[in-house]
Length: 510
Image (cartoon, rainbow, N blue to C red):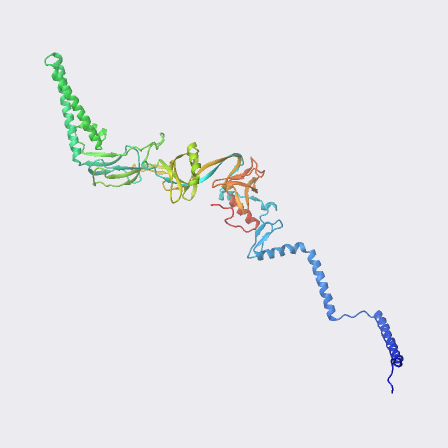
């Protein structure tokens, strides 16, 4: 058989194609008619996908509608994880690490009045020692602070009492710590010095000889006036009287040099007896350390002998202290020498702030620099200068047995800060440093508003250990009443009431 050509195969192939096409059209027609009658069928997978999409859409819609409730809490949750929180205006507050509860508006000055205003009970006011002051304008002296120490005055504060002659101590009048006045008895000495005994004996002998010469001159004066004898003899006796009187004066001075007072010398003249014992009296203070209206008082710092003790001339008997006036020894930096010289030359009044053993410090104004040393310390490079410090009595009592005890406010060894003015500012708002409190970059004062205190942010231009200068930017006005103390405690109370965490050292300056 010969192979079939394409031409010979085409009719059969065409018939099969027409048959297949008719069958396909028949199936499509049947499917179309079935779809119009029955709904489409979904598989299980398709159903799950549709359900998930529906739930997601519902969750998004619910979240959008409730965003005012869940969005702040979600922000706090993530902020607690970082240990800090920022509110809507960018102010940072401290988060509660344990519970995650944070006030998003704590320490926000523009929030509700409860966070910037504080009411204090009467007990709270007493607890913080609240003091009020009226804001006003005044001149302010900017100062430099120089450390200093209370010192004794060399050659003035300590007075050593020595034995004027050889003897035995028979009595000690004061007790250690007692205050005595100049001229009060301190010690009794029974004299055993041979020179003193000889000098007294010669003094008595000269006194007796002078008495005899005076009687002889008086007798010759009467006889000469009657012409019984020549006047030459009377003249010789008068010369002898003058010589004896000169010798007596010399011996009297010798007794005084031995330590016998003029009153004791007069006593020898009157009684014509040798002085067997001598009393040592309290001397007068050296220099003008006491005001005329105040009685000079010397304190017995030390007693170095006991009754019955033998002493030689010059041996120490005791030490008296005159603390009515002391020195402040300041140590300025070398670069402060020009300002210190200006203050000394111009008599600029300086202020001393004296520490008081843990209590409130004591302020002494209107002091003057006495002098500056002419050399700088090699190691510390400090320049020493001295200020005269008048002291103040804080105790002056007497016991039943007559002993007197005193106490001075300022004592050698106390530490002091000297405030030396270097510049003056005119018309400034000046508050005590306890009237301001710092919180981060902000400074606050508390202004009285009825029964409450409003926290006001202020700009502090200058601050030293005592005062703060507030900028006159309208925040505070003359006549406003502010808390002059207790600002730190009031700030802590306000922060605690607002629920925010507080740094216990924030705004607290030592």
